[in-house]
Length: 150
Image (cartoon, rainbow, N blue to C red; front, side, top):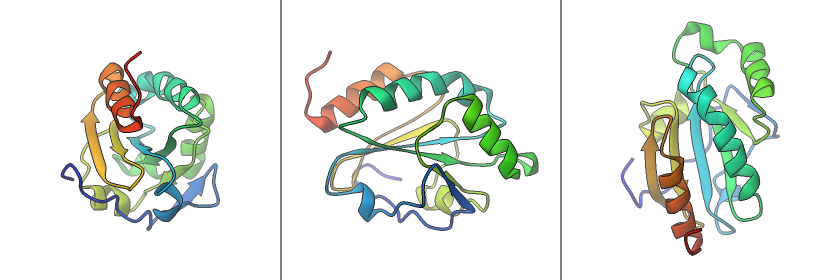
């Protein structure tokens, strides 16, 4: 996805966890959105999750946060395992389970973990992949929110 591209429609889910489902309209017009891709078989994702959860909680009033579970192998398709890992790692935000890679393909995403920051109008303002870089993510989110650096 290119910067400033509009957020894809959130459709094609295998199941939503922690939500009855969200649409693009639910996530635009009000506040910016962070969409992060992860996988149960991704060690880096699990290592980064406490940082993502801290981020989610800190920005709870200012930012929508949505997780997308992107399977990397057949073993990653087990819904019970996805639920178990989500519980273990405190993923309480809505989770789009993308077992058929429909949303992954719409985002043209190839990485886990991966982070997409959209402004309140639903345009992509920042993308990054990999386990580190939470300071950069915070900086970009603060910029989209119009906040000064902490």
